[in-house]
Image (cartoon, rainbow, N blue to C red; front, top):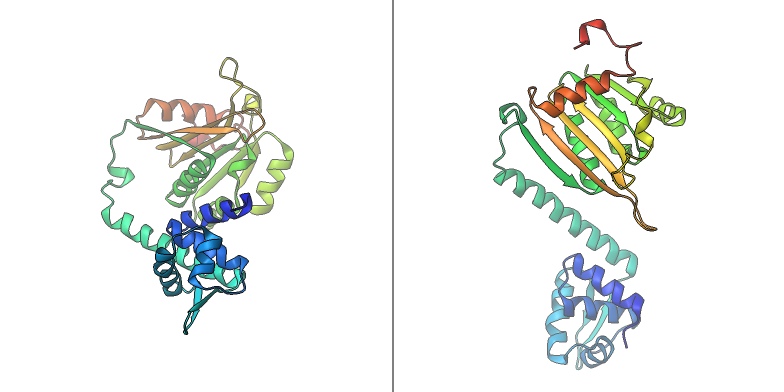
Length: 272
């Protein structure tokens, strides 16, 4: 009988690229010091005829060792070694996917896009990744208003600091002093200020108590606005809109909103 924790391990192994029988056989072998095909079949609840195929695939992946004989014996590599093998394989596949997707990418550069594009995206990871991508592509100015600290990952901090180091103006506003202090510590080259947008951290009336997560504008032509909606006992649901183009209405409105609370440090030449 497969336990709940073993079932979870099998599911995770499949998510990392193993087929069902391969995952079941490997999980079974982690419970056994070694085993014959029959013993693996009985433990993993896999047909014996499929065990041989599964363990040979696992051997080719560096996850199982075989002792020749009659009968043959099989054993799994140590858990730590298996994790390293799977991590390296997963990382390699991610690198291959990254290259493949770039090879087939058909989108034009942002400077060639229609000036009225607006897209939506969902999920904290997607929003943070888009924010980091925008900062990395900045040439002149990064204007960031932080409503939720969840967007301030180490990678984004690094991107902000790199942008500032290359001469890009980086202006970051936050309502809470602790958040501003954290930004100054991580991005000493940025211009950090207290935003006048006090409603960032409060619920938006009539919108399921949603609050603003982040307002990000890059080079005054590209905008990211995210919101956070609480759920029952779980992580908030995060959604965002992403707009591009200097003449995009959302971008024009956001530029005026972002300037609020920045009057004391903003250069008059930057005023609308």
